[in-house]
Length: 141
Image (cartoon, rainbow, N blue to C red; front, side, top):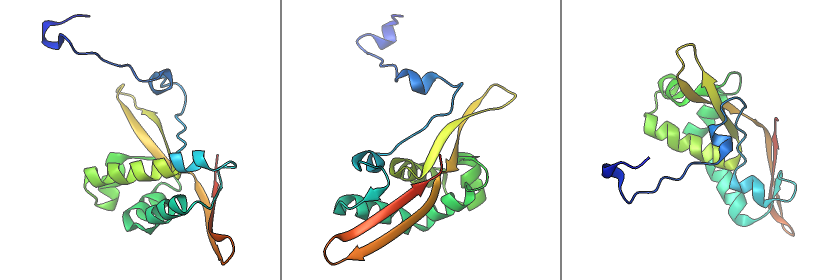
């Protein structure tokens, strides 16, 4: 559709999986994609990134809040008394790390919101003089 106001602009439609609201969206973060078995991390940059996410009070609070029931960013912001911008930033960090999944929530009014659920089950850290630091991450599927 050509409109004079948008002349010269090109719009790129996201991949189909982002438009298909009938199935849950499963996000795998870049950290999980680097490891061959997606659960053991030995690369110093990966270890540093995982530990940085878990070190944040806000990230841990979001993980605890979404452990039992999925919540939207607005619900998390209200429940945890966090600014909405901070909530979205922390959700992005947690999603990139593969610790939360986001999926659509449909309500009776026809509006759509993304709800997030904690998929992190266990994290263990070991330090060895020969092998360095290893982080093992177990997630629920």
